[in-house]
Image (cartoon, rainbow, N blue to C red; front, side, top):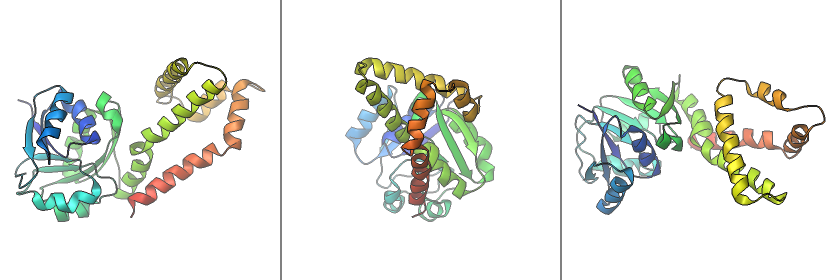
Length: 252
């Protein structure tokens, strides 16, 4: 018999994770608007249990908390009972804040990303050691997992892998724009960039980034010219700064 996972919240992240888990778990979703829950079910493509948030009883349930961080106090005040397990994907929300607002027997912070919907998330976790093995198994259903040593490490990982899809989307779009500027058709540029990203994702898993760069860059060649332009325009520093600024937000 499949275990039931209860999502508190029905936004994009909840949907992405549910897409990854739906084959191995029964899905329950709790939200404010029944019509939105119906839409969530239709898009997920399976039958789910739907409940409204007001006075929802979480007793003995395994929860994945997917609301906006600013709504934690409000949402916590509407929930009744004591959950068995609470997995929170709220960026920058500490274990202590979770404990103060939602009652549970165990707590884990997790930071997946939107690739969860295609089971390719990079999910980092931290929390109660008694839930370590179970939480790793749970989130392995949607991709790779890594248990970290502290909440600070998770916040850094949030800035990197949690927010990372947006950074890479910007780079992808910019590469396509560059190809179009030089005369390539937009559709062709997108297909070429898509192939680049897919292949790179496989290569980087087994080869150090510096070695990949050196393997492509020949003396006086096209890659050297393009790489020099990236350095000249501060791409490296821009990426470092992006992680720094995103991390700062998790600490507020």
